[in-house]
Image 1 (cartoon, rainbow, N blue to C red):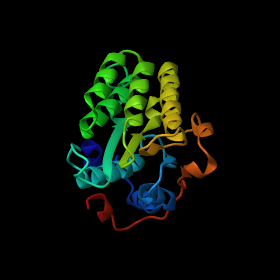
Image 2: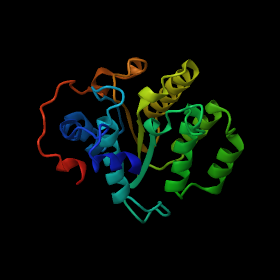
Image 3: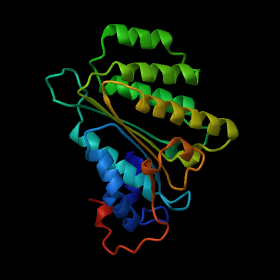
Image 4: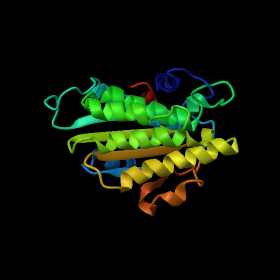
Length: 239
């Protein structure tokens, strides 16, 4: 996350476009996703070329803000009326599946599950033992199942905000694409099933994610315009 945010500080070809960052931040659907007290899922298509960082930068800003506001791991139900848990994975940071051990959907799912265990410290010992016993770190299905089992154990005052950004970078090779689709399908299945916690999912990509759009309702897809007006004031990138 921080490496993406640092792109807003320096003048370089990969610097985010301030106009697009502002447009994403001001988007009514994204604002509603953040503020409404209800489960919600969104697919954000950034409307830019694959290597433009504006979409990832915008998501990183949201995640950073949420983590700043809810920085302490949750240990007791008396700390907050709502237990806010923020989970995030940036595919853009793990493009090279040949060299990066974390550059796979299996590691994406494992990262999200471990973040949940780290951020929410109120799981009972039985839930954690079941997770340990039922998780094969080399098997994507078992990891996703364990993540879903943990989410199902969360109480009604828990709010999970889960971000998966840069889906485009996990579309090659074909096996990584198929596993990425599987993870998205399973996460959406958790969202659409009944559970006590509030579950908010945001998937994003610089380009249109046609390979998963069929799994979303029309009002769950945000397509940013390809052409946006130029924003002269770029202070939004370093604020």
